Image (tube, rainbow, N blue to C red; front, side, top):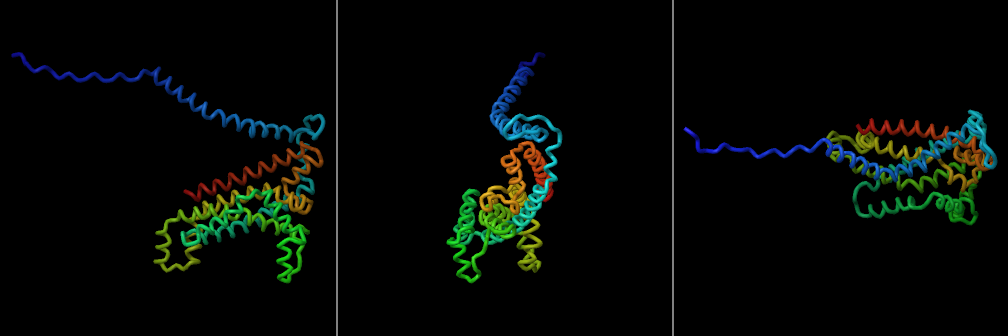
Length: 308
C-alpha cells in the first residue's frame, strides 16, 4: 500500500562561508587596524624611538655642541663619577624623599577632608585643585617674587609676626625647604584628587563592620583605610617620585641652578650647554633613564600586586 503523505523535506542549510572569504575579511580588519595605529606609531617613532637611539649613540661618542663627532666608547660615562654629578644625585634624592613625604601627607589630609559630599565641599575641592592649573614655570616665577623680594607680601607677613625677614633662597637647606613648599602648593590638589577617588572606592560595609567591632577613628584609618588605599597611594607616589627625580624648572628659576641646589637634570643641562659636551650629557641621561625605568617597573609591580 502506497502512503499518500509526502515525506518532510528539510530546508537546505546555508552554505558555510568559503575559507578564502574569511581570510579576506581577516586581512581587511588587519589592514584597518594597522591604518588606525599607523599615525600614533609614526609619532612614537619620530619623537621617542629615533631620539632615544640618537641619545644612545651620542652617549658613546665625542659629540661637542659645535664641531665634528666621533665614537669614543664608554669614556663619556666617566661623568657619573664627577663630584658635581654625585652632589647633584645626593641633592636630587634628598629633594625627592622630602617632597614625596610632605606632598603625600598633605594630599592625603586634604582628601580625607573633602571625600564626603557636604555643604561647601565642592568649593573646597575647587580651591585645593586650582593651583594645579598653573604651569610649573609660572608657579616658580610667582614664588620667586614672594621669596626673593624684600617688599613681597610673604616677607612683610613674617616681619609682622616678629620672625624677621628670612633668606628663603639663600643656602641649600632654605632653598630646598622653600621649593618643597612651592611644589606642595602646586601639586597637592592633583594628588588629592587621585587619593579622593581611591577613598570613595572603598566599600562602606568595611567601615560599618569596623565600627561594629568597636574600632575607633585611628584604628579604622590604620586597619581599613590605608590598606584599601595602597594601590592609589602607590600610583600617587609613582607620579611624585618621577616628577621629583626630573626636577629642573623650579630650581633653575628659583636659584639659577647653582651648585648647592643642582639636580641631575640641571647637571645634564650644564654638561650640554655650559660645558658644550653633548656626549657626556647623553651618558648622564641614559643612566637617569635606566634608574627611572627600574623604579617605575618596581612600583607598577607593587600596584598590580596590591590591586590583586
